[in-house]
Length: 133
Image 1 (cartoon, rainbow, N blue to C red):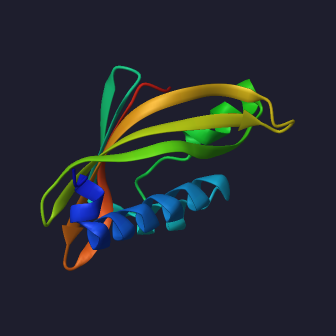
Image 2 (tube, rainbow, N blue to C red):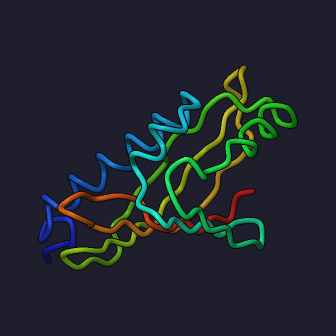
């Protein structure tokens, strides 16, 4: 049986690269790097709220300041990234990530669904829905 990844290796590789760059930007607290991995308008659904970021630079970094202050958040890492559906211009990824404190202890493990889109020949994260805060 052929998996969706085996059927679309170039798409999957491009999307995994975007996800890697997004996580690296997050962990370096680099809003510009995060923006470079996203398409706009960008939608985030978490904590029972939907937020729309119309353009690059609108992604607020206050969440990470709060996580640092309240949970001693230091970095996050992907646990799993599964391509569940795709077309030539859109891909749905079921994701799981872990947030860590500065002493490397685990804050929590969270599941998300990210929608990546191909716009002007470039893949980017267009929407995130997370069960994390």
